[in-house]
Image (cartoon, rainbow, N blue to C red; front, side, top):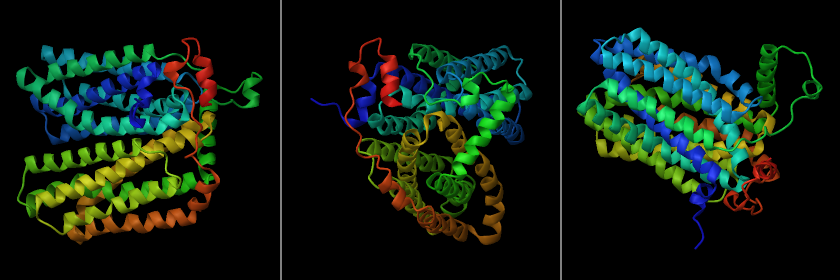
Length: 446
């Protein structure tokens, strides 16, 4: 009996360890989100303190994301992931001990949140660059689909549920301690992943033993990532569309939806949780569907249209007062958005040169981080001045126009035909390779 396409990556022992590390890390992130809020409440803090801590995390990510991409292209991605998990575990473990001993202050949480943000800025580019060295090309879509399924299930449901249970039976400090433990588990799993050589070639001058200072070399690497993006129409077009998409939809969804629930639908926290769950379930379903299929022949068109048409249900939030209608809309948005993200991650790993993948992945991450807070900052004033129906109508319709323009302007339909990704030859499963074939696996996926 053949293994379903979506599960084939799990036949690879190296990927199983990497996936286990990712799962543990996601559970920890889900616990942290809930534990942080109630820990701040427990020490007498409120919304202002929570904003400071959340802001510290965002600043940490913004400061390191681009450099994280350059590092991922220069050194062992496995080593980066291991260090990230160890630092996370140690820093959260310290505040857990302070919490359990009654000596925790809000500024200490802010420091740890900043450290966590710095580590997150290093994690994503390194993970994205490592995955193609572990799996053959024809399994990357399924692996990215697994990540897309796991993220909402573990970070938005499983982790928060575990945190709530720990806080109910013990304290926020206990939840923080378990968060630290997930970092330890993730670090151990990463150690089990075989070391693989860096993919791609460094510049000739560096291979010849150039004397460029490491800090200067990293900045040059970041510049090279920007230049590559500007010279690659499909990449520039997609990132531009994604930037505007995030700007248009994140603020309304994160900031205004709670007020639609409260003021229009007459709901409360339970209804808000229902809509978030619908969005998460939709994301998991969308990821699972895409992971079960072959890479679309028109992959750029399908991906961008999934995002463009997937925003249309947002208009519903400005037109109805029924929670069940909003839940269906949230499900559809989550499914389309995450389905497109699965294609996007696979596309980057297969079309971006190996030596540039970390930097391009960091640019992708940076775009999300940069435009999200701006969108959230102006959503409230926009809702008050324009009205909720108008804001949600713009959020639902504008991405469709921008997405179509991006596809045409970047000539994506011509590009995807000239660079097909749906006809990858069958490659031997990594599970069938000999234990000493790590180098051969890297050669296959390079």
